[in-house]
Amino acid sequence: MTINHFFKSGIVSKKENYVSGKKSGTWTTYHENGQLKNTIPYTEGAVNGFVKYYSDQGVLEMQKPWQFNRNTGMETAFFPNGRIQRTTNYVKGRKSGVHTLYYPNKKVKVNGNHRLDLREGTWTYYDEKGKVTKTERYSRDKLIATSEN
Image (tube, one colour):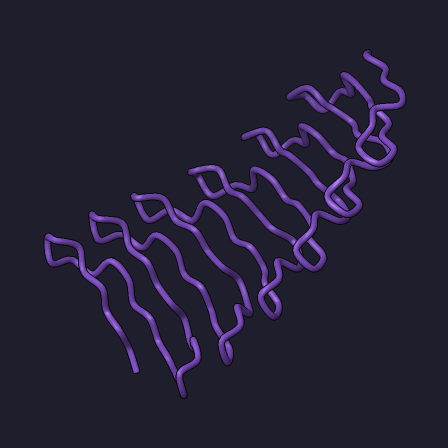
């Protein structure tokens, strides 16, 4: 069964699908201008797959991987031109693993690691040409050392 919701203007605001009373298939939400706002894939009531978020111009802004209702995998945010702005790894809904932030010119801006949502290990900061400008060392999200170049 599909349920459609509408804005006062008559434009569809949301489409929901159910099978045997459980959320199923791809749910979609729309901006008031009719552009796609997000998509959420469901399997037997659980979010499974990439949840995608779009600007009101229809441009993909972010995608988050989900497995059984938990954000798990590499989340990616995008600049308006489609280039990658940020990647963050998640395990069972928590930041765990590599986190990288990019400049619009595709060069790395920040690179570091998370463990259970906390900054861990060495975080390196770069200028737009790729030169290291600063390094920080963390233990359980506490800054223990820093150096600037």
